[in-house]
Length: 70
Image 1 (cartoon, rainbow, N blue to C red):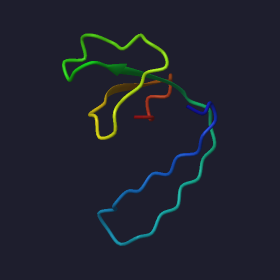
Image 2: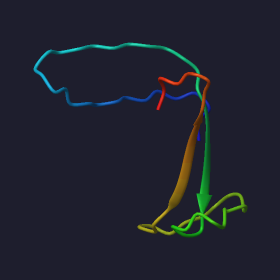
Image 3: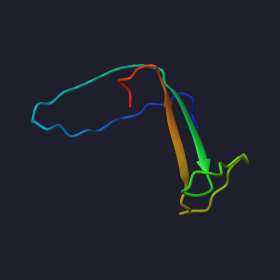
């Protein structure tokens, strides 16, 4: 996974006013894979090989002191 990446967010407004928001920042994000949807047994092997069309269970957390980020 790339250390530096660009993300795009699409949202629907409640009114027809077009709003543009641009920002640049650095965010600390952690991502873990799990063996099932119970998220009780994390995957520790690396690399983690999966089959085509296999369901993946991932947990992603944003670590920030900014309460406006969700």
